[in-house]
Amino acid sequence: MQNNLYFGTMKRRHYAGEKAENPWAGKRVLIVGMARSGVAAAQLLCREGAQVTVNDMKPRESFGDKLDALNALPVVFRLGEDGIDALKGQEALVISPGVPIDAPIVKAARSAGIPVTGEMEMASTLLKGTLVAVTGTNGKTTTVSLLGAIFEAAGKVAHVCGNIGYPLSAAVMESRYDHVVVAEVSSFQLETTQTFHPLSAAVLNVTEDHLNRHGTMEVYTGLKRHIFDAQDETNFAVLNYEDPLCRAMAEGLRSRVLYFSRLHEVEQGAFVRDGNIIVRVGAEEKTVCGAEELRIPGPHNLENALAAVAIAFSRGVPAPVIRQALRTFQGVEHRIEFTRELDGVRYINDSKGTNVDSTIKAVQSMKAPTALILGGYDKHVSFVPLAQEIVNTPLIENCVLIGVTAGQIEQALRDAGYGHIYHAASLQEAVETCRRLSRPGGNVLLSPACASFDMFEDYEQRGRIFKDIVQHLQ
Image 1 (cartoon, rainbow, N blue to C red):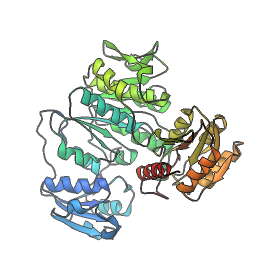
Image 2: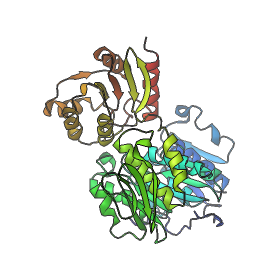
Image 3: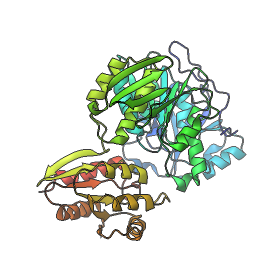
Image 4: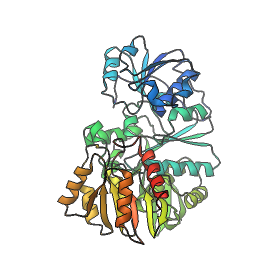
C-alpha cells in the first residue's frame, strides 16, 4: 500500500503524555470535498496555522448553512469548479473520503509533485490521546459505539468518530492526551492512510462491497488489512476467526494478533464458552458475562460485542467494566432499530443495511413474517446471495423494491425462485405497500442492501424519512 502520493514522513502522536508535532503550520493546503469531513478538516488546519483553500464541484448555494462554520476563518473558497486550477501554488492536497484516489484532481496534484493525503490521515498527524480503530464491511458503527460506551464506563472521555458521521478532524480538535479516540474507518479512508496508527484495531468481516470504486475484492480486502500496516509489536490486531479473509490477514503482521469467535475457542482473544463471553490476552483469562445478557440482538451483534471486548481488554479495561457496558448498550440508530408498532405490525429501520451481507444479517434476525423494502444506489455487487437467503427464509413473505437497483434485485429474486415482488416509486409508497401486505404479528423491515445516494443524501436521511413516514401512518 506504499504510495508516493502521500505524506510518508509526517510523524504522528497517539500516546498519552507525548507532545504532538505540527507538520501543517504555515503550509498552503487545498481541501477537496466539502461534506462534513472536509469542513472539519478546514477548521482543524486553520487552527493549526495552515493557509487553507477549500474546493467542491458544487456551488456555494447548494450547501445551505453547512459551510457557515468556515465563515469566520481565513479560508479561500473555490466552489463550483473542479479544483485543478486551485492547485497552483499549493503545498498539499487533502481529499475527503468521497474523492477517489484516481480522481482528476488527485492525478493533477501527483503530476505537479504536490503530496496528497486524506482527511483521516491528516487529522491523525495531530491527534492526542489513545487511538483505537475498527473497520470491516459490516458492524463498524455498532462496534465503535459499544467501545465508546465501554471506555466511558471505565471513566475515560471517549470520542467516537470517523466514518460514523463525526469526522476524526472534529474529534482531534476536542481530544486531550488522556482521552480515547475510537475511529470507525472505511475502505475509502484507508485508500489514503500511511502513518495512521491505532494501538488496537479490528477488521470485523470482509464481504463484497464498494466494487464500483475499488474494482476487485483483492483490492478491497487489501485496503481493510491496511489498517494494521503502521502497527508494531506492542499493538494489537483483532480479527474475525470465522471469516477466512480476516483470518488470513494475520500472516506477516508485526502486531499481536487477537481473534474473536462465537463458534470456536481461540487461543488469544474473545470467544464464547458454555454460553459465557470469555476474553484471554497473554496469560490472563476473564469471564465477562453471559452471551444472553447482551441487549443488542442477533449473532452478528454477538460478534461485534466480542470484537469490542477484545479491543477494550487489550487496552486495559477490566472485565467487570466491560460487563456493565455490554448489559446496558442498546444499539445504534438505523441498525435494526424498532420504530413503531401499528395495528399489530412492527416497523423496523435498518437503513444502515447498505450492502448485501448487512441485509442478510437483518433478514436472519427476523422472528416473524416480514415485508422487506430493498433497493437503492448501484455499487456493482451481486444480489444473488441475498436472493438465496430470502428464498431460504420463509418469514420474508414479500419484497418491495425501490431505487436504481430494483430491476437487478428483481432478477436475482426471480432467478432464485422467489415471486412475491412489488415495486414502489418512493419510500412513502413502499411503506404503504408493506402496510397493505402485512398482518398483525408481522414486521415491516427497511433494509435496502444498497447505498442511498440515488434518492437520499445518505443512509441517515433515508432512515429518518422512513421513521417519519411510519410515525405519520394513521
